[in-house]
Length: 281
Length: 124
Image (spheres, rainbow over the protein chains, first blue to last red):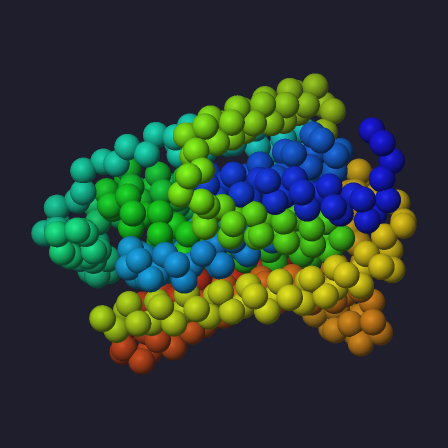
């Protein structure tokens, strides 16, 4: 690899992060999840520095996008806050584990989660909604809500609250372990397990990602994973890329970009798994 | 518009403002950092705990006062991390205002976990 100085290195990292943020925002997978393997595979950045820098960019993109989601009226603040109990506790445990899991094993886990997340977000098949009358735990917690559709407000309720809470704790654990938003897993918990409408799940998931990431950030910061010299270009690049990705031109061929991104994600994931198994991380 | 929607709207704008402010501070720090350290060699291949990172808020603020560019970036990153935390704090007050004590308790638990991570994260 060519030796770069800090200026050149920062611009290369920013360009990679910008591309990841742009494609991640267009395809709905999120930009952060590909920045880490790209930094590790292409630039030889240490995995712990990469996950620390990526986590920061996750907070930036989810917080920046929250206002737009709220305006659409899909997010549910009660579901979000209740499930954040699970994701934040999971995230703190995951962040604590990140220092204890051998770095090569961490790389393998990362690759597997990357492929699984990509597969999940490619599915986008929504399960039927929960019956609006369903009571139980969801009733006690007043989790039911409604969202705007073309034919007026559509009421929904929430099923399988304990199971959803459990999957959320797992999503938080993965988020804290790998420094990613794990939005795909959060949507899985809400959409597939709790039977919350897909649009409500994605909007509420975005709202939760920032808080979950902040819960990992405290642990990461005290460990020194968040290096300002690396986090700076990653955060600015991903943020700029995802803002532009969200305002993409109507003519942009999303289907082709999706395919390109899927190939890139798959290649990066396999590279991570191979490096981890070969003990080269 | 329901009360919940109004609160969420306000919180959404709060989050965006937090991102804009923290990104601006990071950009300022970045410009300063690249001017000062742009010619040096980056060292991210081996992971080392960096003392200034583990020192926390006081060290960052004193670094900013001494015009350290990396401290200015760190200040921006701290503001960014504080942004979702602020959202939880304001949600707590919103639920208090609505006298929704169940959700005051739920929000307090989330805030407690965040505070533990931010101020006692080094203990685990």
